[in-house]
Image 1 (tube, rainbow, N blue to C red):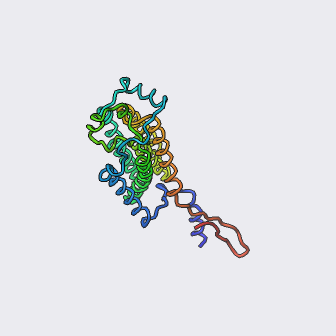
Image 2: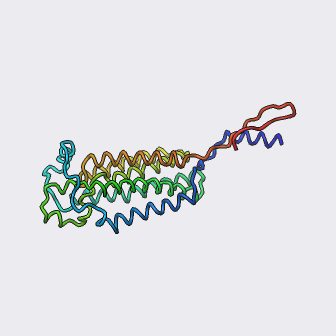
Image 3: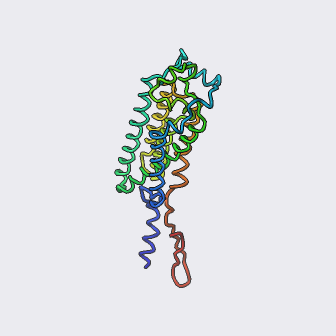
Length: 270
């Protein structure tokens, strides 16, 4: 009995890595599935019906115009914005960043002795966080109906000739910025909560790539700076706060040994 008590007490000095995180499969799996499915449907099936046919927020301000002029000095309207940085933003934000974040998490989980379940739970938490942020972003974009920079001064012919006309008035706030900052920060936060030794690398890689994506969106004439700033801040906040408060570490066992008249007493949290 005494040996068992001493072993329990000594084990508290050797914390488990990866640390177990709070999650509830009966809640988190269906919620994440619904969030992902809802965003996909709203983006690819019902955007034309949900989006504003004309801008509801058409005015801009000196700050946004000034920054736009740095990236697009001509300030000329176009059907879809500027193609090269638009494609680059998709490649960086929707391909490179997710692959790197998932790949690093898989590597760190394996390195620290985590199971396949550990990795899959990490991915689930990141997906739940990212698409929760995107759900809010999508609702605001449809409700606000801010015209994209490339639509300013566009003739009806130019306005209607774009590849995705339903996307013309979904500028506020940036979905790319929301997605990339939520993904990068949630993946890095989960790695930090797990206690992965090189979790800092996910911050060092993810945040610069998210920032690069946002800058490319400005260069593509797809967003005003205020769209980017809010999307970045909102995505970053969601990515840090949701995993921290909804999926924090499972509390460790705490044991204390106290002498009693007839032996030893073990107290604590189990």
